[in-house]
Amino acid sequence: LSFMANTLRGQSCIYYAKYCLGLESWATILLTVMTIAQIGTAPFTSKILMKLGNQKNLVCGFTIYIIASVAMAISGDNLVILIITTFISGIGSTLAGATAFTICSDTIDEVEELTGRRPQGIMTSIMMCFMKLGIAGAGIVSSLVLNKGGYIADQIQNVSAINAIHWNMFWIPIIIYMVGLY
Image 1: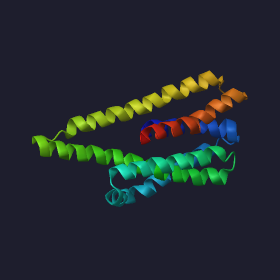
Image 2: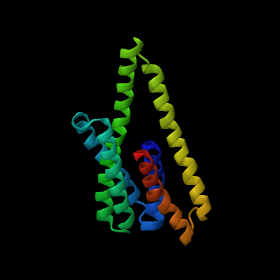
Image 3: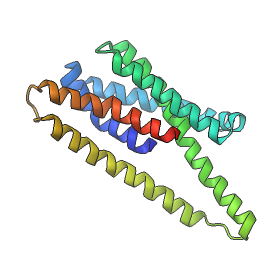
């Protein structure tokens, strides 16, 4: 789910910057800020995971992402708030994503303890399959939403197309993360 939401946001960032902010170059900045947050958070995730545990860390990551994304969505074209909330949502997505990998390795260890067999090949393959499905699903969802909104490339967008861009950039990823909480 987090890969789907993050891919959807990443794909939509260029549309958002170009048609909603009127500054296409800001897409690069927003995408870079998200990546910097993820790289900066990564070294600390193992300590946070050990302190909170998998479930609390996952809930914490999803919650941070959701709150930051809602703030991002309602910030309008305030670029400073967009950068700050993008950074914070990157922290949340890193915590959530790291938990998925930890859960996978914990499952491998538990299965080995129970059966004497170590299923890391199948578990890793299943995880990679779901990541790829999320990434592919994001492209499908994005296209469908933009099409439904009446998006036409390199044109001044109507209100419906702008709303579709907002849904792809903010609301659908928020909904996906909320589903992840349950």
